[in-house]
Length: 366
Image (cartoon, helix red, strand yellow):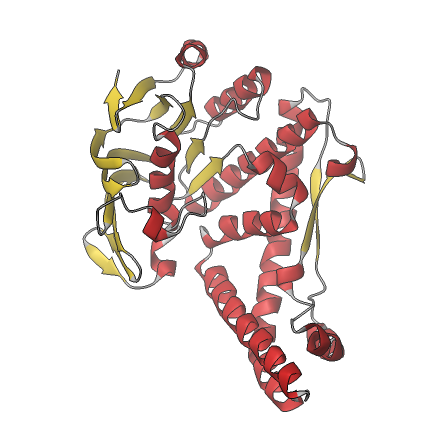
């Protein structure tokens, strides 16, 4: 899968941008603050309908404008498609696939599968459970519309349950009847999410282990461990936790508390691993995500590598690009501030490569 044409209108620092693209490796260079990450964020937004930088929509609109519009034409499984998003904060977000308006995010997300490696992820994926749950969610919502529906419903019910607990605490009365009604609807969604997450981890663990070994030249192994208090007995466990939930004003047991741990030789990687070993593991996770999405969609996801040298050394960068070439990736976008480093990478890549410079909020093909 690859993008043929990409257009931005009033997105961040880009007033109007139109690019014609081909398969291969696309390198974007420019000084800090020029908009390299914004370029990748626009592609990510077209895939996931949100910024990977967690920037609210109102802050993505160019200063002085009222809306932004993103468009692309792409080829997937030998068929041409078009995706459009127009966003006018605070409320309006119009999504189109092949000129047909889509009302549901589940009909949109997954059309353009994407994998991104961003500098901060080396730290966050190693140290934050929420980010590892997010990694599983991002993988599954791009490949399983049912999972997206279960996750959306669960999060909505979880907010309702927590709000009800706070109100009960305020009134000094635990309302079992209300919690029974909420839990009756919430539990099936939680169990479905648990089963799909467990299946995903079991599926990608061999890939993670294999990629870690490739990146480290067989010097390191690794895998994920998925732990959850949700299972077929979840109704009983949730019921037993009600008094604790009541006094803490929140739901203490559920898939929102799942634990996903990065392991090396039966130990937590973030406790015993070096910075280099943790970097290798994060890259392996993303390559496993790429492999999983490709297997389910039948086409290669787009790969976005932001500020590639910020957290990865030259050896790991070259190893990553070598693996991507061996995986026969269709299209990859890479940003870096130093054009001389980009030139070295281009010389080492056998596939078609293209260089772009960002100057004065404009992207120029070289």
